[in-house]
Length: 127
Image 1 (cartoon, helix red, strand yellow):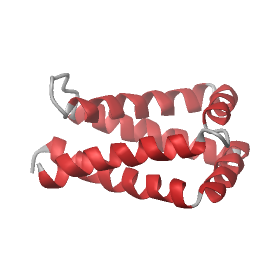
Image 2 (cartoon, rainbow, N blue to C red):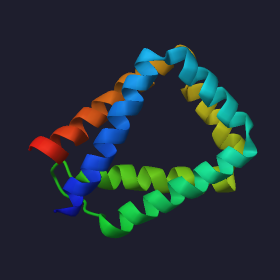
Image 3 (cartoon, rainbow, N blue to C red):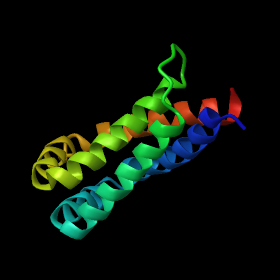
Image 4 (cartoon, rainbow, N blue to C red):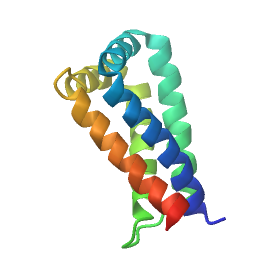
């Protein structure tokens, strides 16, 4: 199986489920994000996981091409940067995330994540 398809299947499933969860249980996810951003242990573990995930994707899939597979590379770099900044500047990153995932923005974030899940799911399973 092609690396792009394998990663797209994983990302598609994760993003699709999280996007639906955010849209159908907005208050739960708002509360969860708020609690996560207060817990330094969760921020640390999240930073390590994001850094490792991003590193693995970028190491095995760093393709800057003019088709859908570049989305996998972009997600890998974003995950790597997220982990990097969570570990280097956790307070500032948490503050920025709090602004981004405000109550009014949560549905928008859910829709964006759902759309990414549909895109990755389509290319991972059907295209």
